[in-house]
Amino acid sequence: PYVIVCNHQASLDLMGMVEVMPDRCVPIAKKELMYMGTVGWACWLSGIIFIDRHKREDAINVISQTARTIRRENVR
Image (cartoon, rainbow, N blue to C red; front, side, top):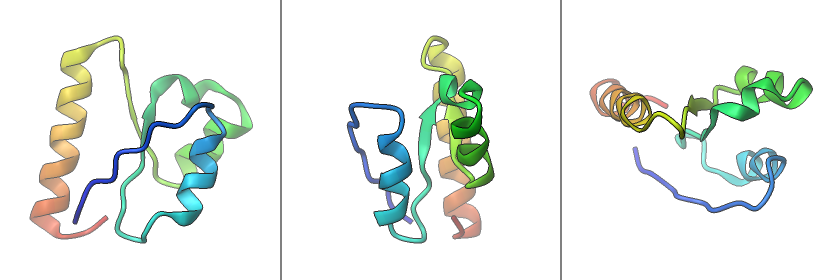
């Protein structure tokens, strides 16, 4: 498992990045994308992990839990 950090400019850039990312990569997106109708559904169905950037502690907990799961189970 590994982490790729990308700084995209628009919400829809994430959809393009998902296509070029390796299979074992876990995409993380801001929670606001989840509420963008079709884009939110597509992100949720593709397994994107959402973080709340306004709640720092919650975001850190979600990322830490994801990292532990990836390392423990050696899965995406």
